[in-house]
Image 1 (cartoon, rainbow, N blue to C red):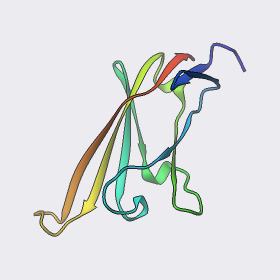
Image 2 (cartoon, rainbow, N blue to C red; image 1 turned 135 degrees about the vertical axis):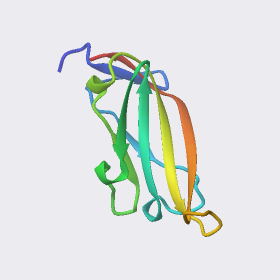
Image 3 (cartoon, rainbow, N blue to C red; image 1 turned 30 degrees about the horizontal axis):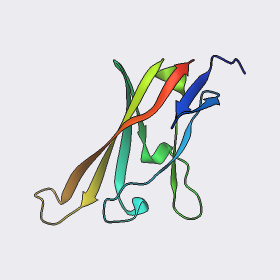
Length: 109
């Protein structure tokens, strides 16, 4: 793999183009019981990864995987939108948004 295909998380550099994160938000219910999607933003580019596109392990952990080539070079923020059943809302669903700033830096693609 070319050395210029890399990204940095918490000061550590990784080589490759497909980061993998355990996605865990505090929505008050298990991730498997709610609908959600993740919008990844890098400068002017963004991609959306839906719950149905994420691998899930035996313990119910969802893994956010994406191709850095789709975003280009730069700092990546994640916007997680959760859709939670709630009878107090007119349509029976509450929408909560969680923002993760500086998820990673894409150094080269």
